[in-house]
Image (cartoon, rainbow, N blue to C red):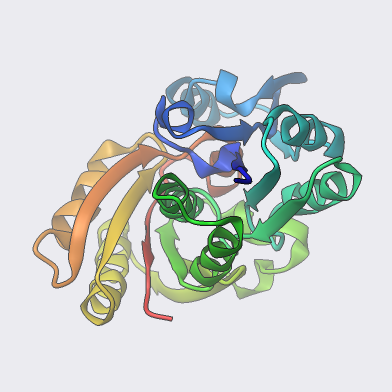
Length: 271
């Protein structure tokens, strides 16, 4: 019987210890702060956001080089690897993994998740559960591709340089507090709010409508602003189709672009 190993990157923000428990290899992205390079998992998110709020030189981020992915693939000891990455529209991580797959001594399938952060976490965990349940590699690959077309995320923030990644989206950002969505690798503007409370209410309206059409678990992420996560969760409690709520702190790589004070949620919509 052939074995499959599951690999992802650190922008999946899997709950502490869960990656090890599920046998998932996590390849770190990096953040440079004041000239010092840090692997993302080595940074405390709360300390990172404190530094971000204090100002100073803007942190920069970088994807893992292909060699790091290659070493991770080879170290799994599996017959085959399925690698799920942050969307290629925002990060170069996917391309690094693809290049590494071409150099690997074992078969590696790399799937662009079309998402990042909580959305990537949802996708990875769904595939990991199927792997534990005995699904074949072909079934896991098909599931990952299907889910990549169904994961949606919403978020809002006072700062939103993530939109300017690669110069793709900056011209679409409205004034006020923009409310944004990410699905199938594309960022779109849902609307503009006059306040953070209004932005959270708009997110909740969009998510509640999606849940009514396709029940899903929801994961809420925030940039060290638990009070905003509280507000979004409260607006979702009791929604038709809500299968459960989880919360996490958005890590430094995404936080460097989304800014302190970001809040959002991810869920699986109908195909």
